[in-house]
Each structure stands twice: as C-alpha cells, then as structure tokens.
Length: 402
Image (cartoon, rainbow, N blue to C red):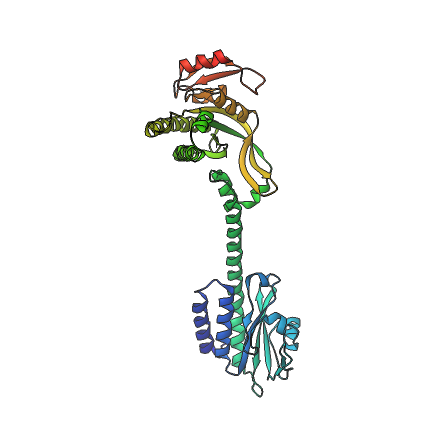
C-alpha cells in the first residue's frame, strides 16, 4: 500500500484542493478528467460514466476527446467490455486489447489498452472511471493505484455535489410555490414551505388561538367617491402600516378581503395569544389615528373596526384550488373565528370589541367596558360583548339599528 506514496499523496492533495472550489457536478467531472489525463500520460481520454439513475437531471454531456461534439459517456461506453467487466467484478480492471471507438458518423478511433475503475458510495456503484490509452501503450501499476485513489475521492465529491443540487432544486420549488401566494400570506405558510414542506399535507389540529378581524369602516362610501387607484393606494398604505405591529405581537396575517384582514395569534399559550391580540389591536388603532391625520386633506377619516375572540380552533393548511391557480393559507376555522368576524362587523367608529373568553384572559390588564348581550348576524345565540375603547354614541346608534 506504500507504493508510490509520494505521487499518490501529492495527487490527492492537489485534487482535493481543486474540488473544494466547486459544488457543480460537471465542474467536478471535468476536474477529475483533467487530473486523470495528467496522471496517466498514455491516456487518450478519461471519462466518468455516471450510473446514478438521476444523473441526467444534474449533469450534462461532456466534450469527449474522441468525438467532435459533446457526448454522454454512459450512452457511448457502458456496453464496452471493460466497463461490463468492472461492474461485474466490482473492482478495477484492465483489458489489453479493446475494440475501436465507433463515432455516430461511422468512423472509428483505434485505441490501446483500456481501464475501468468503479466509484463506490457505500456499497453502491455511483459511476465508473474509464481510461482509454493510445495504441501500443500500457498501464503501469502506478497508473492503477492513482486511478483507485481518484475513484475514492470522486465518490464523495459527486455525492456532495448531487446533494447540493437537490437542495437547490428544492429551494427553486419553494420559491415557485411562494410566488403564487399573496403579499399578505401568513408567515406560517412561508416557514412551513421553507422548513417542513411535508406539513403542507398534514391534517388540521385543535389549538388554542386568538383571532383578530379588522374592517375599514366606510370603505364602500370611499370607493364611490374616489378612483379605484386612489382607494387601492390608500388601503395598501393603511394595511402596510399595520403589518409591523401585527408581526411584532406574534400575529400571522391570514386573509385579506379588500377592506379587511384576519390575523391569528397561535404561538403562545391561550393567555399569551389573547394578550398579544389586544396589544396588536391597540397598536393598529393608534397607527390608524395617525394615518387619518396624515390623509385628512384628501380623504375623509377611515376608521378601523376590530373584533377579537379566543378559544379552540382547527388550525392548519387550507388549499383553494381553482382552474388557473392554487392558493394556500394557514388558517383557523370554527366558531371562534366566526365570532371574531361578527364582532368586527358589529363594531363602529374604530372600536375594539372582544368576546367573553378574551375578556377572561386579559382581565385586570386593560379597562373593559360591558356592552351587554347582543345578537350578531350569523351567530345563533346572543353573545356577551365588551369594548376596549368604549365609544358610547356609536354603541347606542348600533343598538338602535338592531
């Protein structure tokens, strides 16, 4: 094993240094070929025949010295006796007399002895190094040892490059999936697709959540008095102002519907989710107040009405499949969500309304004003409703209307 140790050591060090600079499979194959040509002076050409069934996906044909155009070494040489003998014996072989290389145009290239050395990854043969020598030449023992050393380095290098390619492909697929999602898609979906794409198909689970709905009051009137471009720009500016406080409080923006947003708070325990939802609501209310002052010369004041409810909901991926595209969202469904939406509908004048469960969880942290038991559209049973801002005039008006 110590034969030619100096030449072998220098060759391994030189090749390892070159391969460390790339993770692209074809660059690795070209580097290996160049090194074999350099180490085996009698060679006419050196090829690495990729036997991995997926090789066509991450490699491309190489320019062969025996051809006038790039060729797939596998299709060219797999059936040659040297290759078949190496695969059968699962070790390096040399055949002293071989058939000429036949080009696609029918012309032939005379060759001398031919060597083949399997490239192993664990117990599987990933590729075969094939070296064709000039007529009348011969392989030395040193040539054989050097090819064996290179085959061991080649296996690890090619597998590392293949794994890098697979990761790159996965990232491309993830990017394509995310490109179909709306700008306000839940960060939950992005995290799932990026880190655990298998969860896209997982069943929904029951979780403690707090759900916040917000609606722009007077959106219909606004749309009637201003151009669509002006209204859209204003709404986009408003919603963009709300994104930071929502994310800062741990909320995920789940749904957008023209004049409203649905936000889920799910990452803490039940109490923390409720507290974070209320914090976000107060931040949104303050941002809305500041924005109304800013746009006051051009738009009437636009109030943001908010409804918050807490409890157990079914949480998980929901996929909406249409004829043109598929949209994914990570959503909470059930009575908890429905009541939060109805509270937002019921609110007026920029009020923040909460349900009974949320009130229990934030008790003593903020003043809470009892609005009594009210009937809400779409909810069968009357509900106890509380305000965090207490707008008496708007509350009375709303009660009179119902």
